[in-house]
Amino acid sequence: MKILLSKPGLDGHDVGVKVLAHALTEAGYQVKYSGLRKSIEDIVRMAREYNADVIGLSILSGTHLILCEKMKQEMEDQKLTIPWVVGGNIPAQDVEQLIKTGASAAFATGTKIQDVVDYFEELKISI
Image (cartoon, rainbow, N blue to C red; front, side, top):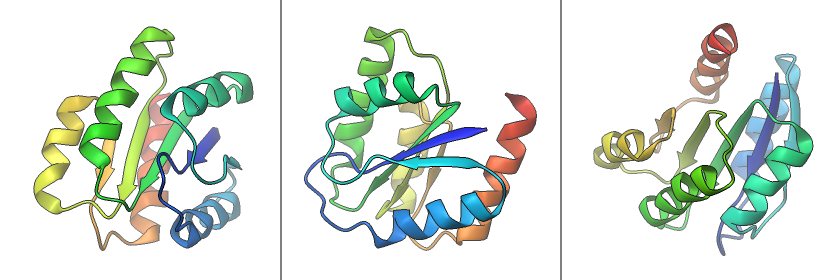
């Protein structure tokens, strides 16, 4: 399974997403990290070019609800129908809203890396 991990918006902190990329690579996934400060449009375009099976957004800036609304719209506009997930500095009370917005999963603050890897293992079976 090919996973594109990305940092949308102006957030400049990427240690967590790099740790996740390493853990997913160790678990046998093909992982590409887009780098910092990508627009949602760029992320969706990159996912198409990479032929990604899943997109993972890492958001620490507090703009997760807004960025995920944009993600939903851009995925529809570009007719890309792969699952996408979001994690980072996500308050637990926002998880349900992010799922309703279209994320396949939303990982709240404090989620263990292994729990995310386990989620991708489950997702792999359904793709």
